[in-house]
Length: 191
Ligand SMILES: CC(C)(COP(=O)(O)OP(=O)(O)OC[C@H]1O[C@@H](n2cnc3c(N)ncnc32)[C@H](O)[C@@H]1OP(=O)(O)O)[C@@H](O)C(=O)NCCC(=O)NCCS
Image (cartoon, rainbow, N blue to C red; front, side, top):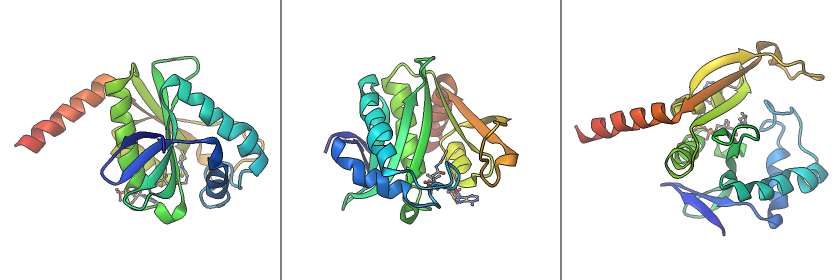
């Protein structure tokens, strides 16, 4: 297991070629895909596009990481920090977990660790995340890890998903802002 980092309850590791079935199973649940594409992702697409892109992404230091719950290491889904092609100091935060894992704080715990990693161990200066405005769980995770609402935007989708009329939202967090918030938290923890 090629471990990237660990938190109290999670192991985040790099994916491998042999993980095709895990990714196919994760994307096969229409509820998981509800605010993404609205339908399962085809196995061929994951084999030919999704997984190769994930594996190639590790060359840039960050990427998409399989999340496993301690102690039994059950596969929960993935969390990612995806470098922005045009702006090397910017990364996009994302997450996708099996429905059985929802509601236990796993996305927040993993995302917090990735944000800390990016700001303390890489040259990242800004993290952003986007989701459908109606994806309340995803927005809540963004808020809990410290990202702030920046804007709502509307794209011209060919086959809009239910709720698309409310648009997509963008949240951001800068490194200086993150440091200031973590120092405030450290002081609170000391007092
Ligand atoms: C988004 C997702 C990763 C969240 O994972 P999770 O592990 O359940 O998240 P957490 O438990 O850390 O936090 C979820 C928060 O959202 C809240 N929440 C969940 N559903 C909600 C809803 N329908 N309305 C409002 N808040 C909601 C939870 O109460 C929790 O907040 P709290 O701790 O203040 O109570 C998970 O729902 C998922 O995989 N969804 C499908 C894929 C997806 O939509 N990914 C995001 C695309 S950008």
